[in-house]
Length: 226
Length: 226
DNA sequence: ACCTGAACACCGTTCAAGT
DNA sequence: ACCTGAACACCGTTCAAGT
Image (tube, rainbow over all chains, first blue to last red; front, side, top):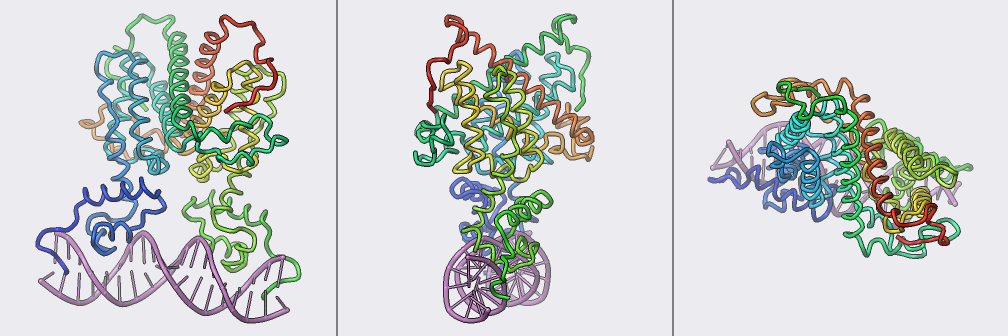
């Protein structure tokens, strides 16, 4: 066919198809040839729109991260409430596409949505009175927790076969084969428990930090540091 | 050469070489052919020792998890101290081999070291007085946090090129290009801050839970549930 | 500018053949 | 039992050729 009058492909079409393939069959199942076939073109066609395969993955990752709600920052919510709301939205966005999480969790790199999120979190924590170094740590530890929770289900990490848990070896895992049946309750319960614990624990550190300081700190001009 | 008088390969040699390759060049760089070449044999030889490539990865993952210290469970340490010590050892083991973490974080499956760890944590939390459902959640949320922290450095997730952070788009990231320089401080500081927050937050939940109960609970016989 | 087929250097895995 | 080379159906990417 050579060059068509109207382009057959666009970055957007490619990214959408790639995300579908990744969701359905995993990151390893995304090959440029299979993706091209899904789009009705030949393999090398993709290279007119992306330089390398990793650039496709970058674009996929950024559309996933772009789904995270950031409206809780900059509004009037206090930092604890904001972290709780953000954490839930962040997890929901990633858990909807767990197979891309190992790629995405390498950091924002140059991806706009990832950078925008880091900017919003860091800015809001500094504004709330956290010293910049602490604000960075909060962004980091939240990513650790959220990415870890979205990376793989804890419950589905245990096989459903009861004979896999020999009582002589694993005396406390005699019910572990039932975990997968309650996957959602287990994973969401663990996430919520951990999220609350994190924010409660951070609140204790915040109190220690601001004990000798006037309330409403952070209003010392716009602080910017990593 | 056909069959040699003494086997050229063993599962152990294969696993050691695989882990080295993964550490040096990443999970994607581990091919059966390259691994075989490293061991001085032809590609198909590996299939005399492992049924499929994933079985090699399972063995690699289990040797990494086997490095985690579990001695803090079963000893006399209280659950908070035990979680802190375990969390640090768990992270150290995984952070030494970050490239295998995405695989390993899928859960223990049938891997002995992974199951042994899950068994020890769950048993110790129940013994400490946590209801079984909570003990499960603690195991889960700790894995979320530790795996997330070992999966990828937060600091190295930001490019070191200052021009990547346009002030108009990312007003609060004007120092982000310096993060990579302080990689270890940032990541270890964030991990330690998060670990303490988690354990402190869990302690608050524990107090609420045991408010109306006699101290030293959990001595109601060996409880086993997921 | 945007697609194609051919080609290169790779993959994981199977299998018959060798000792 | 444990290795080999040949073979199959795949990869990512480059490139000259087509319109």
